Image (cartoon, rainbow, N blue to C red):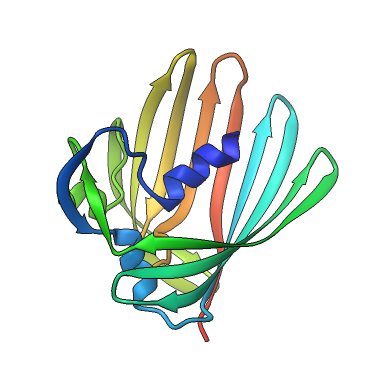
Length: 186
């Protein structure tokens, strides 16, 4: 459940109320400039009520067209001492996406989340290469749960997310960290 929430934040925008305006999807733009065969590896570590899990997500660029990119996503998880691997699932990212209601094109282009409390810039090193990132600290609340997060994004990184740390308080406290591990370009 927690991984699904993080994936939604990483792979796209939650579409609660969509305006009629369309914009170029910034996630599409990060992949469209790369060659098929490019691989991106991200790791998610979750600690919830003392139970730790780890998920490795490997994205492989299969196809780039003028309207979409097609990726294969392989997920390997370790949960409660057991290992699971999901076979490659195709994932399409459309070039054009509706502008979420209440968002500006600049907010979407920078992957600026709701509830920002502070922001800045930081250079982060991935696989020996420096990436200039924009970071945001933000707070969200849903029912009895409050979440404090920080995310680092870069338009030079496929999927844009370099790192994200989220701490949830409420009935079950948890911490989830997503980190970009590797980018392989053919």
